[in-house]
Amino acid sequence: MTVATFASPAYAYLDPGTASLILQSILGAIGAGFVILSMYWRKFIGFFKKKKPEDQDLKPSDPGHTT
Amino acid sequence: MSSAKTNFADPGSFRDPAGRIYRTPHGVFRTVSRGAWPTVEKLDTSGALQKLIDGGKLWPARILTDAETPAELTTIVQESTARVLEHPVLPFVSYPYEWPFALLKRAALLHLDLQLDALEHGFTLIDGTAYNVQFIGTKPVFIDTLSLVAYEDGDYWLGYRQFCEQFLNPLLLTAKLGISYHPWFRGNLEGIGIEETARLLPWHKSLSPGVLSHVVLHARLTASARKAGPGAGNGKSTAKLKKVGLIGLLGGLRRLIAGLKPAGLTATQWRDYEKNNSYDAAETAAKHEFVGAFLKGARPSVLWDMGCNAGAYSELALDAGVESVIGFDFDLGALEAAVSRADEKKLNLLPLHLDATNPSPNQGWRQQERTGLQERKNADTVLALAFLHHLVIGKNIPLPDAIDWLLSLAPTGVIEFVPKEDSMVRQMLAQRKDIFPDYDVTTFRNLLSSRASIGKETVVSESGRTLFGYTQEIHGQ
Image 1 (cartoon, rainbow over the protein chains, first blue to last red):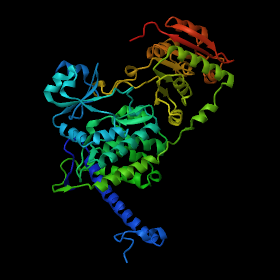
Image 2: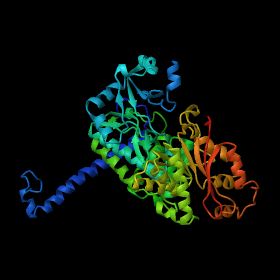
Image 3: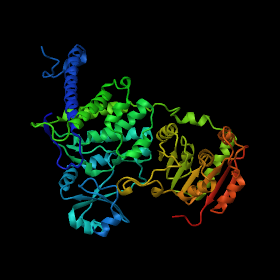
């Protein structure tokens, strides 16, 4: 097992537990993945909503207008 | 060590070198060490401190000027302290092993929400201990200002394991297995271990992503780390946890906890508890009137409702002008109901779990870290309605001793004597030998009147239930 140095705030008094830090790293990566995925998912759904009249005023930079 | 430190230092506040709590006649103060002061200063100048306090989640803290530092602390301040904070005095201190499920859950969500709010302002929490939360009625507040530290993208949450042990695992014990966490949490003080929780949960209760991550995988990794021992491995790398990852982790924990409900309780809604009384409407009215009149006369500020059940009389007390009520009961379902009543009717009621024959003791480091219930008493008046017979008949506590204990809790009170003729006591004695020859209202009256002055006495039921209102001339130690 690689010994990793985990970034920690300056004033820490608690033993965080190596395993708990490793788990955070894993879950954090998965969580970050989900957040990014859900961002793209929303953009993807937004693409289908552009057909409604009220969406005609979307800014040109909106990813829904990739044509 | 200066005498001021010995006299005023809170014996439960010592683990964090960033500062500690002192209780003096002038109030409650928290010293901030020179090392920790830059963080607190940044918290203050950035406006984050005030915003988090105004948001209602963080207990108020005021940074004192040197001139305002109380006299009792001047020696300590010279030694190692940069500044002193002042906190409003908490009305009552309670511990996580006394909280019913609904309140531990609420405390957990507060902890996560505060951390998410703090992250928006560039700060995070360095620990995850349930003892940093206290309750005002059923509203949780986070009391440890020094748990907030500046956040840098990449920082890990060092309190994650502690949060799992002190918040998540106890809640899971009740939600997934219908087991009370109270004896375990109280005995251990540090919560419920990750490996133990994983071992207790059967595979079919561990299938949600939340439980699989925070319990099962957590336990596997903890076991591996333990077996590998200290100093395993030889490579080095610097790992970072991106902010979006931390927020995802906190959000996931929040979703998991928000969805937990206590299992194995017969009822958790206060209306269900009202139905099963052995009283009829006229008897209930008589009881209400007696208690209401007593309270209007005694005018207590703080009341302890022993055997509060779903909080009906706690509510009555608050309606009669009592400022705050602490309700105690053994029945965890009744306590859930009391919490829901307090929420719905906006009552300043804090329902807590109590085994009257074994109240929370002084314990922890030097048996002083966590204070026993008797030492935290703050009541002007005690209500013991349909309570005494549980001790005397149910638990074989001698009647004089039970009365002495109730009288030791507050100067005034109302005790309901439930005689053997009543169906509740008859039921308790149905399968047992009646070893209570002196359990009758005359003996009770004699014992009480030799210890206190009985103001008023009224029979409130056909079966002979009698309410006694009393005051004590000299309140005991």
